[in-house]
Length: 210
Image: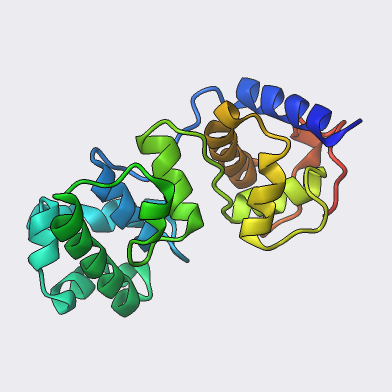
């Protein structure tokens, strides 16, 4: 079986298993997803969703957050960990959005990458979830599962995993495929316990590189 053939099986089965999979970060505007994905580094999405409620209540738009003192942002986001660097990045990012993009999030991948605190994972998430464009989000679940299943071969570096997946995942499937990997990684193909292979929908095709 080629990797393309395996990818098609994996995509189809995960679709069946998780038909409604979507981003687990709460947001109703693009800039809020930018903030949340920065806070989600080394923090659970569930905690981020709680913390940002206070942040957005105090700073309801890009301009307000751009004008906020970094220390005030840090005081709110500290429960997400790495508060100082996250607050600094969020402040700088909102300032660029305000001054360069009129408060809007650009829909260009390279422009997103140029924003403070935005890496390839965040840029892909924005491209896919907000703008509906082809995207592959190589978070820890994506990297772990694609290696275990055999879609990539012992690649751990996020960008290299992303490039390998672009070759075998249809562009229109990439974004939702990665969301489904998150669901599967949390519920079945877990990281901190032995994976539950006996109830995995991919058990018969997975290469089980555990």
